[in-house]
Image: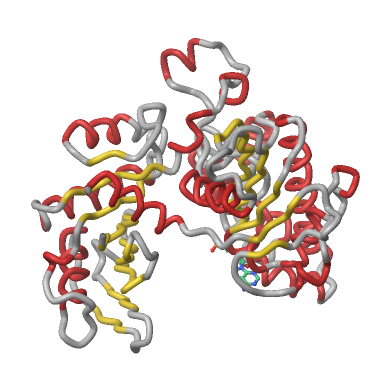
Length: 398
Ligand code: AMP
């Protein structure tokens, strides 16, 4: 089926149009500055990029602009909107309401609205995209795919926080986890590479999604048993600009000294912390690598801290599962930064992890980077969240 995938932000819409069977991407692009002025960037493989300023007062005009360019004789990839079989939406937070993807109807929209307190920035924006598509394409089936859903198999000991139980029962405070669509893709591909896709029982996989936002998932028998993000995506290990886990005492201490309110404090933890906060240089690991090689000690410390914390999580998840068969590196850093992969996993020989430096240095697609005598297989697998969304959408709409 030909599926249009929508990832709506508060002032942007990313889209991709792809075949859910072959994974072929026909077109993709971005609407930006919605509500301000409006800009469309449209890419079709093998053709020059198309960029245009198009007024987009709301998400509706953005979706209309996407459909117009998709059917345009010069830059389009379809003759008519009828050729779009269904629409799949990325939705950040499904709370405990959604354990899998679902067809979007009024009940589904109401449930996504109930999850707004858990994802106050993303869920309202995701809903704007959903509502715009429903208005512009009322006859098309639409599907919501949640970043949290794959993690809903975690046992209570992994998802409960050690605070009064009533906050879990009454208010839904628990670990939810994110990047679930990516971790699910990685789990599926890894099981296939291990020859265990039809027999996942007994397998132990650690999926490391290392990008600007990062999380790890411990996946046993093909199901998540723990993950590093929490109620929100600020938790876990340091990321590009997010702090990861910190001692909550720091919050009260700094708010007192600098007379900050909680919004200002959270802005620091979300946008000014992580490797950016430590280095003062950049949130981008390429800039950090360059600065560290230039002798910048704080950039070097930021990289060291990142690797140290990821290594600790890998060790913790191996302990949680009683071993590990495969460790997988994915997303911008995991797929592209061999040096960091080596630093994260290099010290784990005691656990049976042995990286082959030559394989690790090679660039390419899906590949094994562990040595032949490594007890644990280590793979680099480029993630493909869009393909997962397309496959779920096709499955639910057939
Ligand atoms: P993501 O959020 O998955 O797009 O990942 C963004 C991070 O991946 C940034 O810190 C980049 O520095 C890093 N990254 C992306 N592409 C490359 C590359 N070709 N080489 C090294 N790092 C990269």
